[in-house]
Amino acid sequence: MGCLEQVAVYGGVGVCAVVGWVARACLKQIFTVELGITGVFPDARGGVLHADVLANMLGAFIFGLVSKTEKELKPYHPTFYAGLTTGFAGSCTTFSSWMVEAAAAVWVPAGADGGHEWA
Image 1 (cartoon, rainbow, N blue to C red):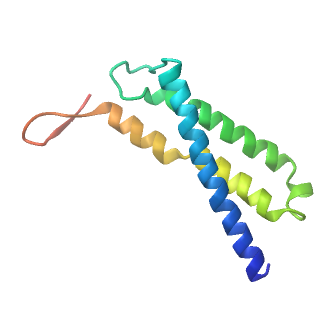
Image 2: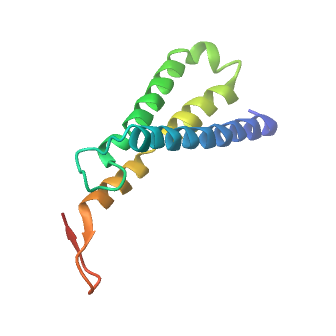
């Protein structure tokens, strides 16, 4: 793979990652705020267990769909393949956001001393 092809693949991954992040944020907004679904922790900010489920399902579906056509798609359009799988699906299904929100739901400040307790 030449230098220009590598730049194109990295650029495709970057652009699709931004699109995946926007899709995740919009789905989270629709799923939690517009539909009023708050998850199993009613006092949690944003409903941790339900806020990212739709985005995770979409990202996994897209990854599975594109992976099924890898042999046909990758040789002719490596930028498109890498962008959709690594960029979009990877960003849309990011595990780190899920873990940060799960921790925020169960880790509450205890008091003025700055200590924390698990809920």
